[in-house]
Length: 239
Image (cartoon, rainbow, N blue to C red; front, top):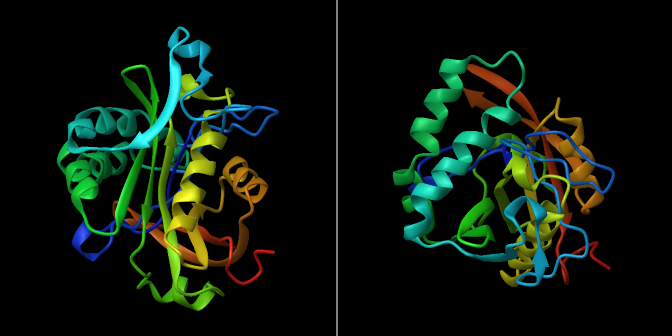
């Protein structure tokens, strides 16, 4: 599962992205997002859960370091294509992975100020990741749609298909929202493809509401995204 639906830019100007899901959903709401958004592990408590797909390895969520860049790129190369619309051109997907989701780009994300990248780990393997960005949006459509300011962006959210249906995505989402709340800012937002019904259900389940639309460029064409936001603890409408 993955989310990555805001316009990608170099970290210096804010990576942006689109949140999404890759893979089939399940009754618990773990809907695998790859380029869209992720799911969850029922009853997960970081560092204590076990994922059968990882042969009993304990699941944990930790902050990424540059040493994780290559493995994160490998996970992204699997999950991003799964979240793209069916009519996306393979060459556009490949170019996006090469330019926006390479090991070098991950290292830049990890080292960029006001960016925090979380890793979902099963033993020594990374099974998912998310990125919280504390830069303020500059996209005119996003600025016009958001009702809460200043805000945090949930820029990316991915869970590998091996971990779908096991509660990993929900656990990663909870930790991502906790991290956003730790910023002290009153709101959090994300972008998700309008055709990604499973991701939309997942985000809604986790407190997001639709407030507007924007565009996401993949190759030479633009796709349509919904803009979602929610109030963080202590912010307006969070009671």
